[in-house]
Image (cartoon, rainbow, N blue to C red; front, side):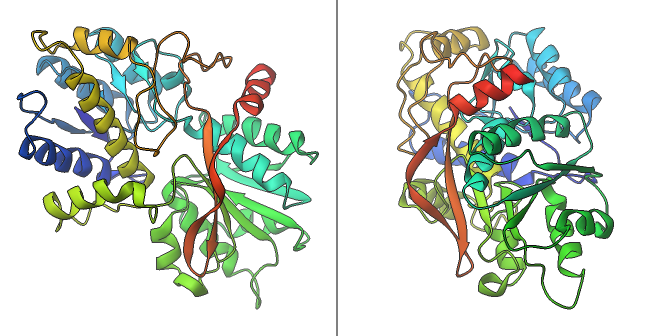
Length: 377
């Protein structure tokens, strides 16, 4: 099963369920999994704890062997629901701490903590002061902890923390606060999911001239589609810096995903290949397929056998989209409050001529920064 929020007032991720459906066609058209057909169930978790618990119940009722490549901010609700039915959760988006604590969770990225720790390190080299605009929620309360650790490790002061609604239609007041004395040496980081674009809109309208501050964010709050929608090379996001888990969408490592989407979801406008939710679902299903194909031929594929196979998986290649993955005891990174974390690497990107491009080569490991943030927190 894959679940994600659709048609809600805050962040929506319809591309993730669409990608799961495209992957089902792709894998079954190319021989299935050791001759077995992959059947994908999808569920709208509506950004709601009751709805996500119902999705988990539906997974159990249908004997789902795993929940794969999903998004939910209701971490406590879905980890409890899955624990009661022993269904593994593979490759969640990484937005809640529960995904990094539940023994049934198998994360494929470092979640928002890695993005924020990485963003802090990236910004410490570029900005004297940083203002962080983030949701006034329990999840949002974690954001400054990780960002600040990256900043202070780079010798900069902690960010000015500006919590705000993540579903507002106007952010003029908080934009005014974020810009402050409007120096080019300062940066404004906005991490508001789908509403980040609304915030940047409010920021742009503050005065006659565009603000001098440098803009920054993390993938998911800013992605290629937002740069395109706000003017491409003339976008106010030109020169903005963004931290990601994966290589940019222009990287040839995504070619297999793009070919599968072209063939099996060509007319599905829910899928944007540059969307990190879509990318996470693709990687999670790729991992799931490899793990199932590696199981002994006679083994029944059940939630229990998939969980056991994941527990014994190590050094699994995703073709360079992430570092090699595994969830054995030696793969776990021993980060406080994030016991299940196995991938603490990020990529640095910048908007150049209207395109998100990678800065430097390869991955940057932020494990040390995350350890400090977790122990501080």
